[in-house]
Length: 254
Ligand SMILES: NC(=O)c1ccc[n+]([C@@H]2O[C@H](COP(=O)([O-])OP(=O)(O)OC[C@H]3O[C@@H](n4cnc5c(N)ncnc54)[C@H](O)[C@@H]3O)[C@@H](O)[C@H]2O)c1
Image (cartoon, rainbow, N blue to C red; front, side, top):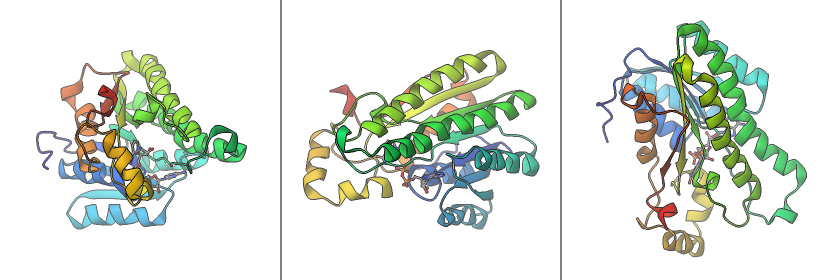
């Protein structure tokens, strides 16, 4: 898939959650379109994504980051400013999927941890990114929600709550900065084949259930999500803010 229609030449783009999956595919797509990348992830392995991009002749710096920690996110944003002086685009994508459990079986600390990474992490990223974008005249932000931010599935209460929160946070932040040339949107992917969902896709029974629920009859490849992120971050989407874009192969059209 080529993203050449989107030109991000000399644009500075910050992305979290880049070790694998959607974040990695989107980082590679932005790099293909000329962006200079600043990449944050809690996993050291994610530095491999920056190495791949520089190996292909692109520009990428990796900062080990825990998105649930304010100081850590602040340091990621500061690296972007020290390196490039600005942030033009951000893709706040880092997240985790907790184990499947009915609500009464969820440990309160486990609930807090899911909210800390999946919701507070998006808040912290936007807090420090918007502060810098205001200084340089604007920018674009895309947050990764999920179809779990629109509809619930059993056994996923904390994740569903966090992703509903991401959609609310996206709308609220978009209104705060609509007149400041900062556009803020969310994406809501359906099932995507990544390490996060490997445990489901490795189980034939779960896979069968998921496919019965999928009009398109398959999981997305991470690259199929990247295109929507690039579009929302591009000038082609200059009148879009506060919205959530569903990329789910028809799952929520039922
Ligand atoms: N795979 C799907 O079906 C699907 C569907 C909808 C939404 N999502 C969302 O997409 C995003 C990316 O997930 P993915 O499917 O590509 O999975 P993934 O496991 O490949 O990527 C998740 C990334 O987030 C990083 N991460 C986890 N905790 C972190 C933390 N505290 N600080 C910084 N980085 C952290 C991981 O190291 C990893 O690189 C997540 O927000 C996820 O909830 C995934």
